[in-house]
Image: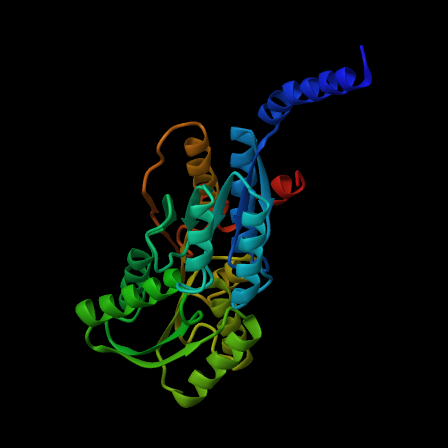
Length: 323
């Protein structure tokens, strides 16, 4: 056989092996959170890893350090599109900033699931999140109960443009206006997803309203920062506080009376279910368009229950070690 014939046979052999190699590889799913610096997102990551293990998917986890780094999140999403991942799971930092990136992913044939926080687009496959409006109503109901539906309160909010937290805050305000009209919202400030800035915002509100009776914090960093401000002023137990999400410091503050309640999500399940929708699609099945997960109210009365402890102190290390 001449040299050209040998080359042709080698080329045909290489082509013949390509489909089997590709079909044998794991499908790659990019999971892009709003941020990576809070326990909520680490728990989402653990859930995504668990789903990847169960469905035979490779999980690429990458997100901005802070939830206000909109341009960085766009860069990460666009890099995953350029890499031609098999699926994209995204929690949008800002409701408008990620729309074009999602459109590009869909145009490239990449199925997109939005989780935790929505965006101003319907051009995605599935949406997985806590019922945030209902969670805000739950927080309002508990704070109203603690204050007998009277008094002056304030809200320490998250960041402008975040759909999930805006829904929470709106649910809280709507429920207070409807069910506890004698409770007056005296102040609102953003903590900007940062504990130090949340502490400063909390101190500003407390200084402006020394007769404040209660607080609602719509996220973990907001609540952690406010708790620091309250303890610095010696006001622990004197102001009723309902927070959102949980970390170790918040759990101890609940035990010690600095916090009175926390409305808690299941971030492990959010991460798991979001990746599962991609697995269903890649397996030829149609996932649900929307999955709303219920929030849970945590108080000192139920804190030590096994199911509650699993929510507020999830075992994420065993999953993250697998990465």
